[in-house]
Every structure is written in structure tokens, then in C-alpha cells.
Image (tube, rainbow, N blue to C red; front, side, top):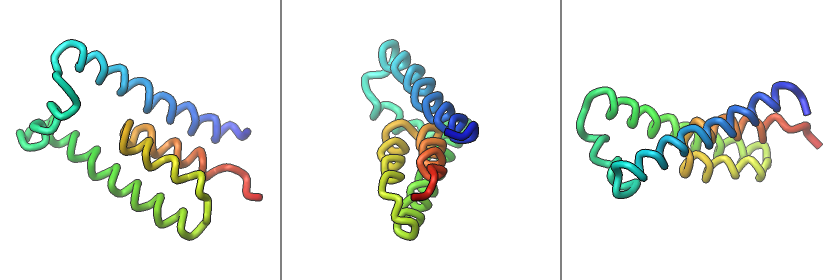
Length: 105
């Protein structure tokens, strides 16, 4: 495996573990559930800006994955879509780049 693929994989793992740990700590301490984050999108300010930035990035990434998979027929890369939806673009993007950079057969 190339060094660049290892970097993509490391970033995907970090993008899954670190934000998930922060979210679990928030849920254990303050939040009644993931839907409690939804009101933040309409409040304005930095939190809303970051939330909408993540939503926009996730939408663009999912579209990019869908278009490239249709062209390249790399069906394994579709695994990055649930990772993006469930864990965010910080995990989905490096995971997609890891899956996309596999040697061609």
C-alpha cells in the first residue's frame, strides 16, 4: 500500500473517531439525542455556519462519489456515502480518496 493511501486511511479513521468521541461526550453530558443539534442550523453565528458548511460539503461529496462511481464502476467507493452521512465529510472524503486510489485491475 502506498504512503499516500495510508495517509487517506489515517485521515478517514481520525475523521471517524475524533468527531464521534466529541459527539458522544456531548450526548452523555448535555444532549438528549442527535436531533438536538438541528436547532443550531437556524440560530446563525459560527455554529450555524460550521454546520451548514459541513452539510454543503457532505452534499457535494455525495454527488461527486455518485458521478465518479457511475463512470469508473468502482462500486466499493459507495461505502464512503454512508460514512459521510453517518460520520461526516471528515471521514467520508478521506475514505473515498482511499478507496479511489486503489490500484486498477
